[in-house]
Every structure is written in C-alpha cells, then in structure tokens.
Length: 392
Image (cartoon, rainbow, N blue to C red):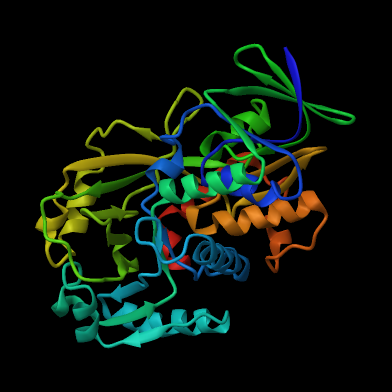
C-alpha cells in the first residue's frame, strides 16, 4: 500500500518532534518512529544538561535559541525545563589560569557569566563541590536542566495540536529520491510518497542516509552515566556542576543525583543492529565512575543504583548536521539536546524558504566534510570526545 504526505519526519525524539512542531504551522507533517513513546533513542537517555556556551558562535547560538524557545513554550517548570545555572569548577592552578579566558570568550558571545569565589562555589553546590578542592569557579546563570523525554512529550502535543500526525512502530528501511519527492519504504512493506523527508534518527542516521557508504560523518560512541539512590533528602536549589579538568558533570534529577564522565578513551560502537541507544553495562566504565565519585563532596549520594552505557553521535567538529542532504531529503542529526530546538528552527526555515533564525547556520551544512577521507573524519571526531567540555 502506498500513501502520500507532504513532509515526513523520520525519528520522533526531541529533534524530530521539534522539527514537526516548527513545521506543522506551515505544512502538513507526518512523524514516524520505529519505537514508541518511551523514546529508547538518545533522547530517552539524555542527562539533560543544557549549557549555552558552545565555544563556536554557531553552537552558542543554537543553544541560546533552544533555551529561549523552551522558556517560552515550557516555562520554568522543573519537571521539564529550569534555568538552574551551571557552576563550572576548576581544581588545579592551570585551571584557575584557563577559566578567565573561557569567561572572556563566553562574554564575547554576549553570554552572562559570573566569576565565583571558591568558597562561594562550594556553598552553591554543597553536595557536589569539595571546598578545599576549588581553585576557581564561574556561574553561567542561564544554563538549564531539562527532562528531554518530558520536553519531547510537550513538543509532540504542540505539533499534534497544529495538525501533525504520528505513527509509532514504523521503521524506515530505504529512501528513494524521485523528481517530485521521495519514495519511502517501511519494514512492513508499505510505501510513503513524501514531498520532503527529514531524517532525525540520531545515531542511526548514517545508515539511513549513507546506504552503507562510509562517508557519512556521524560516529556513535558509548558514554557512562549513573544515578544514585532515590531515598535521599532533596537538596535546595542548586546549579548543575561541571568539572572540565576531570571531564565530569553532575546534577539533581528531582528524585536522585546523577553523574557522568568523559574521562576515558572514546568507545565507538556499531549501531546497525541496535534497537536502543544504549548497551548493557559490562563494567568497562566502573573505574571511570569510581574516579569521578572521588571528586565529589558527598559521593554516597551518587553511589550507582542505575548505570547507563548510553550512546550519542559525534562529528569531526562537534557540530550537528543540519540541512539538505540530497534533492528533497533533509537531515538534522548528531544534535545534542542542548541544540535541539535551535537546529529544528534552522531546518524549518530552510524548508519554508525563511531566513535562518540562527546566525552562522551555514556552518551546519551536512556536506561540509565531503572532501575528507572517511577514516580521517572518524579519527578527528573521536579525538574530540574527551574535550567536549573543554570546548563548551
């Protein structure tokens, strides 16, 4: 059976749903996802840290567009989105020297940053920060903590209210560009003829876009995050905390603490056969988490009761792929939750012929690595893993 639609968005995580919500006011949108509303892709596992300073101006612009949109559409609701602020803590003399440069760079991109005395930093996040360890600190007050699954649910409601439709449990297996659109093949034998197709399948986007080609610059990697026990007292309002020198970040999730670490060699993973954006915990990251807990003021609050070996996508420049892929196939992939709404706005503008709302968004062109050797693109992408928080 063949059906027709105007815009088909493949992937109903936060990015695909945000694209649908942005487009539904202007065009007829149908959203497909191979899973269900539990969102077993990267959205469902995202720790929910949204730091506005991204190093490069376009990354910062994507993040500020995202937080501004969420503040407008969700409001300050801790169940979905709250501007908790981010406390960035240095623990070495070298870090104390480097932090003012980072503060200056953020301010040069019109972000608000407050320099914080070490003792004050510990008071802001007493369960996380050891007073004796701090050599310098800064507070980014506009940074936010989000529940990506809840945000996605609310965006989905917004899209549906504007006329978008959604199908769960439908897997796209092939895209066949035609002169006047795209023929889409599903795993149940059905066909969809769409005027435009937007691929928002995260770590699986390379397989759908590349058709087995090695030159799609998306590199899925494993990343550890653990949650502590639930039976602990709720803290007062606290910012989430980043410790760039230790590649560590931590936050309160509303019912328990969580901590993640980049303090390990990158662990690329083949995703073709995976149904979820995580793999069983095999102990590979036990030492990584143990080292991280040693940096925290109250490690017992973070003693792992739930361990996530999650997967997200890297690119060679740590920026997402957003734009036209070929003919009437479009892509928004390797997009962090931090950049999700901004990236959706960029893509929606391209599909409706509007001006980009994000300055410098040409830098997101999905073909910007076309001249690269695929092996070199992969090597460079993996080399960025441990420096993600050094760059923003």
